[in-house]
Image (cartoon, rainbow over the protein chains, first blue to last red):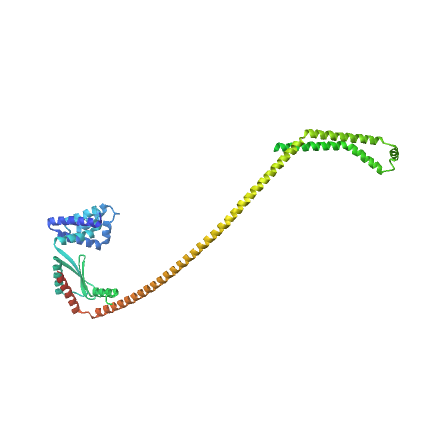
Length: 183
Length: 219
């Protein structure tokens, strides 16, 4: 079974428990925090995901961290289970899947907005509404700036990319000229 | 054949022994004769004998005659014995048969050789004919091969010409494309630089609004 499939299963299992006690958002935040902690503390993550150390040693290290973490008991136990099953290394994948599932459950879609110049608040609100209407879901946006776009913006919703940048238009024009469409 | 040779050898041996015996017996006679002739050459010693010679037959001569007679008798006896002992007639008969056989064989061999000669001559003629045929065949094959090679070379030359033309056209097209690409790149870079320099907040707002309008239309 592929790692991604296994990650989805673990994420779904945690979501099922979260839905039972209606705390799936909280669990998602805990997981997200733990994932960020791992990405910041690479050495810690290397130790707990390594196969060189014994499970007991790794458990001790994880417990030390979890004791100080304000995570819910269910998430702590979930992380211990991942360690026991040697799946803690897939925490990034599991977290991503979990967040996707929680978004689905909450009818939320995430959109990345990449703009050449800073967006005005009014324009951003209008854009969020347009995306929400387009997807028929609640939208959570993340705005990034990229000057290489020259002008305009790019919106990414999952696998869908809507490119309204000058860069894309220029590239399209260039390709058309190369193909000799304007001869 | 071997027994005949042995017989011949035996006969020769007996003949040799007989002649040897003859010589042995003839020895004293000859010696006395020699002695006599020697005495004839020295006149001082044999004065007396010369006197006898003039008077009649001497005793020495009588003894010599005896020896000669004995010698002759022995020769006759030996020849008779040899004649009896050796089947001379058979020997010559067999020899004649042998020679005849050999002669017949030689005649036969000659005929065979002649036949063989004729056969070989016939074969030689056939070979000559075959040689001619092969040469003609080779010549024809050579001609055909020559024609084929020339045709192939001509075909190849045509192909090379075609390939060269094609390569030239391709190179020309590639150069044209490269030039076009460079032109497009230059135009793109120029447009990029101008737009990047000239674009302002107002343009950005317009672009965002256009994007939102398009999204709304999609919905």
